[in-house]
Structure formats: structure tokens, C-alpha cells
Length: 337
Length: 277
Image (cartoon, rainbow over all chains, first blue to last red; front, top):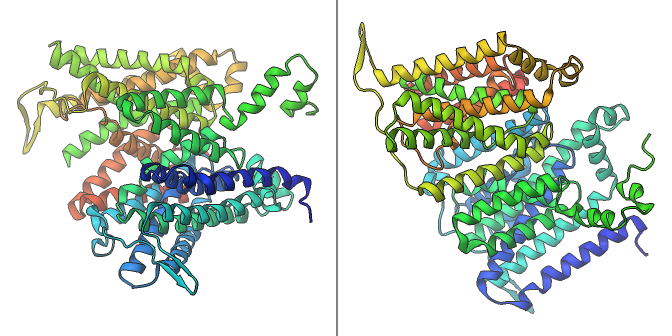
């Protein structure tokens, strides 16, 4: 059955993304680049799921905490419980989901800047718990070390090990492709329409019979579940955990990637994460100047392109067509009442 | 306990600036702590390097940081009124620019500023160092000046009007552009004054703004975002709770306590203790 026209463009985008991520290790086997690419894919799951939550108009500053909850949960299950990584990974996602339901139910009672700040408070509480409490479990300020890599898969006729960087890259790639498929499909589903309606006007959406709170909580829980599973991968590929991995700094980077790319589109986080990671890798040797230039670039992009980098093609298009009849149409405001 | 009170009072200055800017722009300025840091460095340059009198340096810190705030409002923040998300990213960018700028100009190491005042004061059984006394006095004085300005001057009234209802204020002939510009500058100057006041007590470093700005966030959430009395009360409340908490709990638990207060306040009274409904 051919895909409906509404799904054609997302399908093409997804196909390109899948092809690019699957072929990447064919271009280089340099462990450094493979490492960077793995981090990009990991961040992509995080930014794309963060954008799912942001599509309801709420910026969740505790998103990184669910990465942490998943990471610690899976580590403890494997190291203390003796479970296989392949079980612990899913349980990690479930634990993150179970933590997300009460936290989300409480936090989503407020919105706007208040939601931003209450989730920030939650994330700090979670980080401080990892850092200072239950030291016997979470390792306290020194964190957890010597976390084993994912167990090998042995089946008749097939043996997969995950000792090397490239194998880990493909594992992350598989996780990413599943998560991205779900998120892209959701974006052009009924649920995507609901989240968009909530963002544009939650009051109006509610009067039209949209269950606003349930929509927000569903996005929150699903985003947290994805972050939790990514956390399991994070723990077992890095093999060390520290509470600062789940603090304000990495969280801020996720928000920057998402918003600079453009939170309005499902592809925005992809553009933002890839472009900014590559840019900061290229500037790495400039040290302090890197931060300086990076900061200045953020300011400029936000002032010139408030909708993010994803709006650049549309802007250029409009610029080229200026004077023609297409301008109002391209702006999408032609027949606004 | 008394030291905690001094700190809370100075951090309340940072919080006042943050809440003043929020009340006009409806944005959360994450770079606010960097204006505090700039105030610290102006004091370091003026007092420790150039050898100017301390109080003159403090004044200098207020003026210089206020001017930097003014410039950043004109160039950047005036385009971001009400755009919380974009303003967040932009203020992060500014934070990185200012921090990297400080690292490039002064190095990453702490710079110590000598004590401005020696000696102690005995009040009955209470012993207070003159230095802390001056800090408390200056902080209270600045809060009083800000209050008088907002309460009784024309510009101050206009500022409160814009905070309440920008459209209504504009209809009454208030020049919103000017008022916003001045409010942003004053907000930054307050952070700068806090940096100047604490520089002799702690060392100055490029990353020194992180802690006060987090404390200031907690204070303005407790007090109600955009409420100036709320910022002061929130500051004193946080200082008291942390002071009392540190008698019974570890410092990590006290930090958790502050954030739990934030969560509790936002759930029970989302607009804070003094916030408008």
C-alpha cells in the first residue's frame, strides 16, 4: 500500500536519516569519530523525545534526570541483581516511566516558566539524591565504575558481541531508528495533532474536548521512557556513571540543540544536534574561544532565526521569491482572519 | 547563622534584579549570575588592583554592570520580550560569552580581594565583624533605595505600571522602551552590587555566578516571580530555613531542602507567596 501524502515527506526524511546513520561506520573506523557519532545518536533520542514533550508547549528541565534514572537502574540491575543487559535495559525504561508518572502529575499542574522551574527543581533533587544519598547504591560523589558492557548475544548461527566502538554504535543506531520511527510517526498522527492543539491554546483545546492533562502526561511519560532506555545504553557504553552526567549542564545542551534546530518541527532537533555537535567538535582546539564563539552563535541564531535552523530553507525560499506572489502563501498567513 | 543571614540578604539583591527583569520582560535571564560575576571583577580591579576606596569601587561596580546590562538590553533582550524559550537560549549564550570573556581576560584561577574593613563590633554578647556589618548595611540600603525609587519616582511608578499591564501603561503614555531599558539596567546593577559586596568575603572567579543565581531562582519562586517584596521575603525565608536546616542536616540535605521548598510552593501556590493570581 503506498503511503498517504501526509506521510510521504516524513518517510523520505526518515529514510535518509536511517541510510546516513547506518552507512556512517563504512566511511570511517576511527574510534574517535565513531564515538562522536554514537554520542550524536544518543543525544538525538534525547532531543527528539524532549521535543515530543515540548510539542505540548512545556519545556521539561528534568528530562536528563530520566536518563540518569534509567542509567542507575540498569547498572544496579546488572551489577547487583545479576540480570542481563537486555532485560535491564527495558526495566530501566519502565523505572523511568514509573518515576515520570508521579513527577509529571505534580509538575504538569503548573505551566510556562513555572513548569520550567519546577522541573529544574525536580532534576536538582534527583541529582543530589544520586550524589549524596544511598551512597551504598549510587556510589555517592565518586559515582559507579566498572559497569560491564552489554552482554553478547549468542544464537544458533549468529553471534553478536558489543566490546568494540563500532558494535556499540550499531546498537545505539538500532535504538535510535526505533525511537525515531515512533516519534516521527507520532508527529503526524492524531496524537501529534492533539499536542499541537495543546501548545497553541490549551484552553481552546480543552473546550473542544481534548484531554489536555492526559495529553501532556502521555508525552512526558513516553519521553521519559525513551530517556530511560537511552540511560541504560549510556551506562553500559561509558562504563562509568557520575551524578554530574545528569545535571544542569548536559540538560542545557539538550535544550540548546532542540531550540537552535527548531522545536516546531520533528526534524529540528536532528538538525540542531548534528550541526552543533559538529561545530563544537571543529572548534575544540580553540578552547576558551570555543565557548565564546559558541555563545555568540547561539545569540545570533536566536535573534535572526527565532524558529531555529530548520526555518532557514523557508526563509531563503521567501527571500528568493520576494516580490512574487508566493510570499504570503509561504508565510502561511495569507488568509488569516 | 548570622553568616547565612548576610549571604541571604546579598543573594536577595541578585533575586531582586532577576524578579524585576522577569516582571517587565517575562523572561528568565540565566546570565544574571554573570552580571554578579562582573560586579566582582570590577571590585577586584578597582579595589585590589587600582587601590581605590572600597565604597567608591562598589559604586563603580553598580554603574559599570548597569551599563553592560543596558547595552545587552538594547542589543539583545529587547527583541525577546515574552519569548521565554528563545530568551532562555540567548541568556545561555550570553552566559557563555561572559564567562569565557572573564576566563580569557583574568584566567580561570580565583582572584582574592583583600578585606575592606578590619575589626569587630561587640553588641552585648554578639560579635560581628565590621565587614559583615557593612555588607548588611549596604544591602539593606540598596533595597531601601530601590523601594523608594519604585514607590515615589515617576519612572519607578511607570515601571510598576508596565509590570502590571504593558498595554495599559502604553495607553497612559508610558514609554515602554525606555522603562524596559532602565529596568533591565537596574536589575543587572543590583546583581553587580551583590558581586561587589561579596568579592572581599569570597574570591572572584569566572564561575562565581552559578551559586547565587540558583539561590536567587529559589528565592523568587518562593516569593512569587515578578514580585519585589516576594524576592526579599523569599530570600530571608530561604536563608532562615537553610540556617536552621544546617543545624540538623548535612549540607547536601539542606540543598535538597531548598528545592523541595520550591516544589512545595509551586504546587500549593504556583504564583508564590506574594505573586498576583
